[in-house]
Image (cartoon, rainbow, N blue to C red; front, side):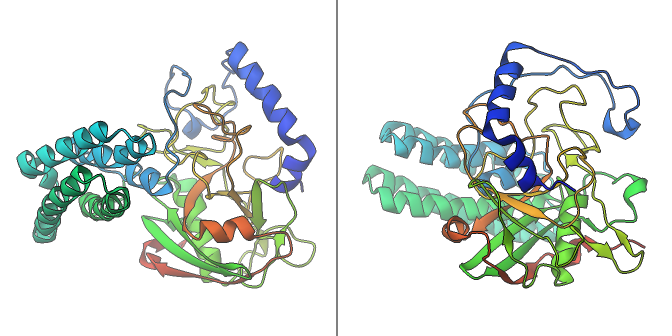
Length: 375
């Protein structure tokens, strides 16, 4: 079986460069005969990815929460944009972002609290009040042009916004197809702490966007599957782990005595549920923006055989930034592999990991209650 690392080695960057040229010059739309009906619901106009990609994993995870509240999204966007303006030292633009955020916190409190269940209203009201106060403090830091203070307060504000948005989620947003009921599913999010021989990293697995792939990973972590495994050789923009000792290249379910195969699973932004068992190209979609893209350093995805989108099992890879695979506005890996989470702490550790380094231990430190095992 050709795993993702071998796929990258065999085809390499030249393949992706050539693919980019072809994709840019020759628009295409593939036929859908013989495709699983769940993978395609209705004709859809393909489109080029536009604008600057979001590279902050925390921001991607915020935007991928299944909520519908324009006020909090606008508030989030204003606060997040501050970092873009700071990099270019556009202090007037920073002031405008903060001013806009203050107006939302002051004038749209009812809208910020809309949709939050009664039992969570008190907590949400405290959060909105704290956000209002801290925005005023942020405004003072901006007036003083204190970059370090602005950066710190922006991060703290976004943490509060994240908590507020999480309070808005009241139920899992869709039904996972019945044919996958034999697989573990993550109906929410979970945080995994992975201790390696080079240090610790924290991973947030997002079941809202990839319940089967995230569920498979969290289940294997709980089984202790990754403990003691080595990172395997691969290209310099990938860190891969999950190949067990022996001839097997994936997880053998002790109940069935069979290889646990996990389907490709990608959620397009704005869609109600993921596509299964098919790449975006094969579905006729051209560079559609995904809920969980490869644009952030430390994206975590399921490795798979190069010729089988549904043959992945236990091997996962951490994607590092590569300008040839993720040029501005485009991403040549999206839709080919299932991203199910991001490294949110320990980027410097991920940088240091090499083939032969080991996972000392991996454990779920938050969200284990969201894992649903097959009945």
